[in-house]
Image 1 (cartoon, rainbow, N blue to C red):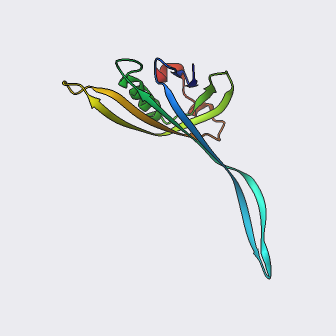
Image 2 (cartoon, rainbow, N blue to C red):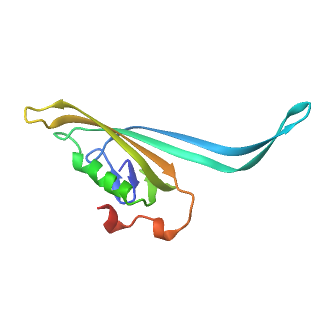
Image 3 (cartoon, one colour):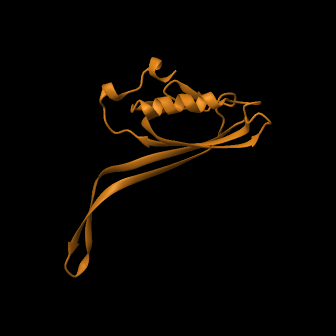
Length: 138
């Protein structure tokens, strides 16, 4: 297991990851002052986003259906627990978007290569009604 989102597992056989990139921000308030630089005050955490890039090669590893599963999870409008391959819980995340590019088609139009990008954003609320469940994701 490379990573999991809810019960969806990113693995070498299912949805191989190629790269992840994360962007974290903090919120600051600025007050203009006469004759000096603005005063700044930390007001709390800002956006935390994660981008997952991967490649599915249906003849070797993964299936286009894996991306369909992630799209169903995204459409539910719920937050999912993100866990690293080492078992570290990385918090609750929502799926903001999924992009895919299909190339190298067979004679019947099936792609041999599907590159995908999944955009996640850290979910900041603690409302249990908005958390994804097992039967929702599979």
